[in-house]
Image (cartoon, rainbow, N blue to C red):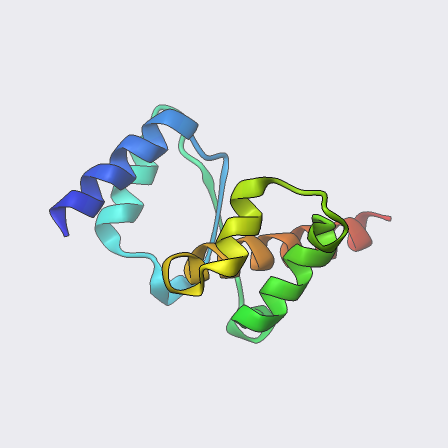
Length: 109
């Protein structure tokens, strides 16, 4: 667990997130403290469980949005879509992020 905590700390130091999307009950207190103590603390947006989409829907949304089937899109994402065991959480997070951003776009329009 310490190994992952250190990797997480290194990651947030490098990319400095501006906004964190999460379910209220899923954010661990130590992770929250690390994020809040960064030089520019991010905004926390809570995703309601009802609006969260499952892995299959996330995968379809990622394939459609990044046009994976037409040969476009990053190779890393293509590889992740094929390797469920190692990347299922990442694809779910990406799909839910796309879904959230899409809903914000429609509200602005």
